[in-house]
Image (cartoon, rainbow, N blue to C red):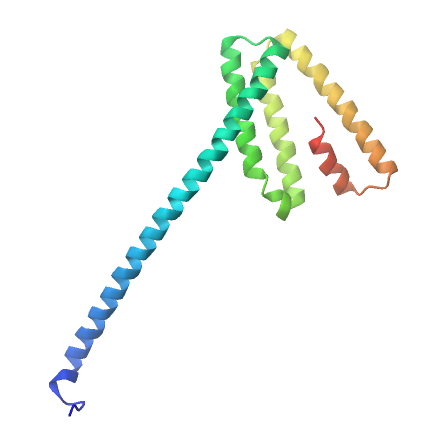
Length: 168
């Protein structure tokens, strides 16, 4: 028969048993947390690598089109590739906002487009910059036409902004 006053239930013995149990539980949980974190990190790395490969190939394709359009030098081509990679990376980071905060998404997409155009203009010479300026004017006219048509159809301001960001 055991009683509270027996040596098995002494205060010091109970404290030692309980603290030992807690130490074991904490170690087990820490191992689980560390392993789960490691696995999560590895999975995110794999998915991030896939996105990076897709972005890189898209950036290379766009860069090749721009090389033909602007007759870029090798140095300009290398800079253009970096600009396009940054653009695609930023687009990928901004994309989730389209489902959660459309206004913020549109503002960031517009900012990314402006930043990209500024960076492109910076690496071009005067003759190449004339081509870019003409394209920007054409794009503004195209967007103005889309905006005008959508306003006549009664589209909301948000719908118009969403459509204009996709016009290239």
